[in-house]
Image (tube, rainbow over all chains, first blue to last red; front, side, top):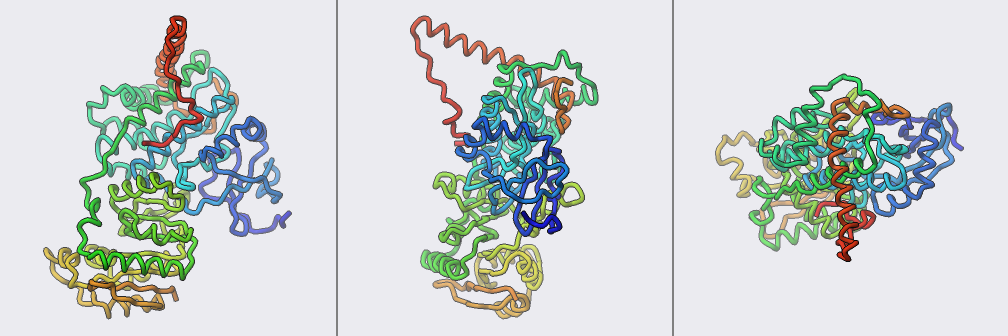
Length: 462
Length: 61
């Protein structure tokens, strides 16, 4: 047993459900299971549901540990869930990532019903990508199912999953960003208003979004008489099947965005590309990171190089097409240590939610052991006018090591950025770059990329 | 409402009512499908084996 006076910190995102909560102690994450959840927890573990879900990669594995609870008067047990290397949020996922998280949620609900349990919430924030698969990380999301009882998480499922997926597939892929504003999912009246009117001819979207939104408006705040409020198990099965087929039918074909064909249109020779790959491999092997953040990763070619020795790589890009293609490729190849992530570095995910602490900003989820910033700096320094020193400052906050590519003004990609504007960047030179970055980093190696005017640097934070 | 214990999240009255309505409809569908395959069974027609969702790949193709 540990000393109960030790530093326990209840996680700020873990306050809604009275069944228990997460706390960290000495850098390890634990979940306290409260006494009021004792029966449900026992049922989850003893019915075989836990084993089956864990085996299918649908639920995070945990072990029961002999740790002092953080709040002992409420506590039944303390469990230690498997460590998730990087927590990501639905507004940072590509279309298929959100779709897979939705389908996994429904698969869990189906299997739960078979043993007389049901999900009591269907929050997209409870799903995380673990070993490449959408996985439920909240062990306390299950309740005993009583025949007749409707699905309490129906509203949440529609707001967190169905509405954003339909908007992304049928209106505009960028509408997943609404999830950043509406932390409990997209309000259905908003989704209903934004969806094309032809979606009223789709039975699933008509009922689960349009009619659902209308009913919410009409019956808001009214008490439901209990006698009428029963639903057979058959009806429950029908509902889950219908949500499943509605989600499955939503498709989005990546293409038509800025960076989708990036690798096909760069001005690199094959030899320069290979040289870059080789340097990333070499330096990753040298630093031996466990967490890599590849910024501006596009489809993740270099992310895969950096992950070759088992590091977990967050492969982020601003372009939904690139992130989607990256995700599809990692799924096809069954890559387990990669997380494609949609992120605009000029406006990275902020801390949001209650007290601005429920969902961490991108920066707070670090630092990474090593950052990759390849073919990126000109976009930040020139397209976005960020002074080089401020870029160095930001990168020093995000990572301990840095692999960064300097793209000089003579490069045709930079010329393109400057073609229609005044060159107000006298310091954007190799010397200016080194001077700025040396205030935050030590340059360990600097190599000219073969057959190119670009240079690659390995730097360590001061 | 009809829950014991009450849910910790508000399921929303409208969401609740529409769910009952939709699910009742869909439940009939489930029942018809089930009896249809039984009727076909009487005539010796085997229905396609429905994939058990234990083996289902929950992810999008």
